Image (cartoon, rainbow, N blue to C red; front, top):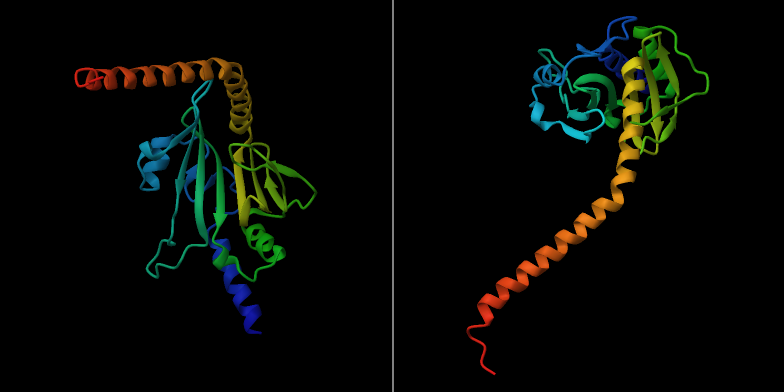
Length: 224
């Protein structure tokens, strides 16, 4: 009985951090299409904390946020461990929402899906895959999915993600970002030989400079 109650309370806590019923355009007030400065301000972060994943042909950046505590007088521990925001040319296009493992311990997949579905509506449990947000964009299995024509929320649990997580995205902006990422990697591959030549020249120049400095020091004092 105690175990069932604990699961119930955990499911309620999890469901409270999901966005309002049926609204897939935002999460906790972070709306797809928001600018990086606006997201940083709302999360009490600095825009300079964002890192560039690709700088060309389009700018793709990431910004990580750890909410830690749920707003309110009780300062309840948050079910979310961290959120990774992704931006395409300064616009929010994707969020990786990772849940705290201690806050979902003991919950079954059905518990998680039911809690989210209470806010977003019935889940699609058909077999599907989604790109896991990373430098390598590995495909991971989708456990449940909530989507409309513009947005999608995919529940995952994989080797790349030690706990449950949601991959939330704007379909339009995500498609643009994926196309840009492919182009960026193609440019990197094309320019890799020249970059290696430049690095080798730099190493040779540094070695020559060290030799010249050593010569200036040692030549006057050399006694055969």
